[in-house]
Image (tube, rainbow, N blue to C red; front, side):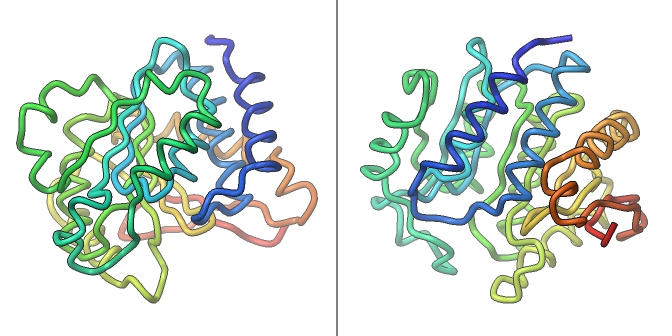
Length: 250
């Protein structure tokens, strides 16, 4: 078992208490990142960190608190130069702001490769073929159905077995294209399966590892401070024929 998690929890706690980065990060999502990290440590799952739609870096840098020293990071966004491609105006990434936050909050800013461009195009370039297996993949780019489905197809090509994909704004009524795109993806022959909802995010993993990921993640979330303090714990539900853990009153 890898031994990074105690440090990850400490860094996440410090980050959550002190960061003031523009963006959205619910406390329950921080607990989920910790639960995923514990699960990956137990199963010796390694791999890179990649986010599509960095904005100013709030969630990327939360995940970066759990990136191990040997793991690379990839921060993909249109940033200012590519805003003409931001068809639905879902966020406005700032390269200057992200670089400043990366310097402040990352233990090793040089481990992060900044990638400027449209994910629907980059997914078919040499960049996509050169990315190492990814264990933490955040999907928060274009919020149209076409973007969400395309980004999930990109994710399934690069995510390592047992890696976790965080899909943002899954039930946000302002962005119905996200759930439409996820549904379209799930009605193909997906290799990624949903296993949890937390905060504003859907979590997915590879089909073959889902039972073990779900079991361990669920156990860790049941012991999380959020469950203990508020009574908002997790139980099984069905969604598009997939077993997922979602919030319930304990």
